[in-house]
Length: 428
Ligand SMILES: [Zn+2]
Picture 1 (cartoon, protein in one colour):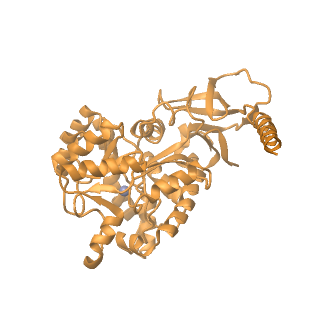
Picture 2 (picture 1 turned 90 degrees about the vertical axis):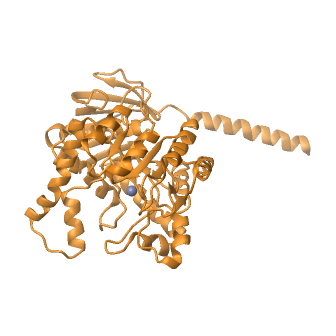
Picture 3 (picture 1 turned 120 degrees about the vertical axis):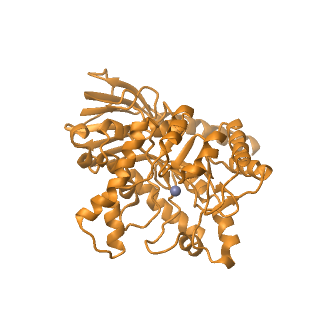
């Protein structure tokens, strides 16, 4: 009896292994189009072909030699770019236009937030984003659950890198919490620390649970992390090879974050030239989370406010000027939408307004794409793997209709194909 069972198991194992071998034949794709964006050289190149083997790019060039059974896609008048990256988003949050931030976090259950996040994640893929970085306001590690569900293919979405709860001082970042609920909701959405030891412990807890990046509040609603606390956070994270990015929207509050050695700064509104130069010197990137004129229009419409096109342009003018100032200062700009408000449109499309906004501010098509590809990949500590189409990079690729070099504002919204990790997720 025992021998029979053993023989049966062996036989099954053998059958299974033959079966598995027959399933793992290499899959080849060749993608070609009239325009190709090279993010490393920051140039467009005509008539390139991209050869993909399983989940990796294996060659880029002209008239490549194709292995047998290669599936060829000739997209004609179109542009091939690396998959877009949104380095700052919040897919566990969906603030209604006239609610304070606290309402969503207080009233929507963790289960409902996760299910909703699955929808937002898919919308990012549809819009051409193959990687997004979620930076907090995700309850206690709900972002990790969503990331793992995508990795296990329970749901489809872009690569997701997550921060877990944002580490800040004792006030956190959620506005509008009734005093009676302050402690519960703040602790649900943030890691509030006081002192160097608590700061170190929070970083270790985050890393133990599996975060990809540490996000801190250089300044929260009112309170700042001290220089010593931020130094402790950065040193602890870096010793575990994890990067740190800081929410900071005031120039004075950025000084300690820069001195503490953070890797990036989110928002950076109104930073002075001298501060930007300090960042350039230390190689600190900035994620300017601005939408576009269209985003402002959606806000005003949903708030039932009247406006003229001139109002919109006036409103957007200072933002556009600011993007140009960042560019002129030479600081590395990384695309990030900070999309967390329900604008009654697809979350992915809504996030793409940030990239459109950079183009509208006057950045060249090459520079715009660089913010959402190689610059973002470097910020996410994934340089050479994503944000670039070259040998051994993950096959994260988007094909847009038309020529992005001549009409990025139109082309950006006409996605023809999205490939993530060698798998076609969208094809039109
Ligand atoms: Zn944010």
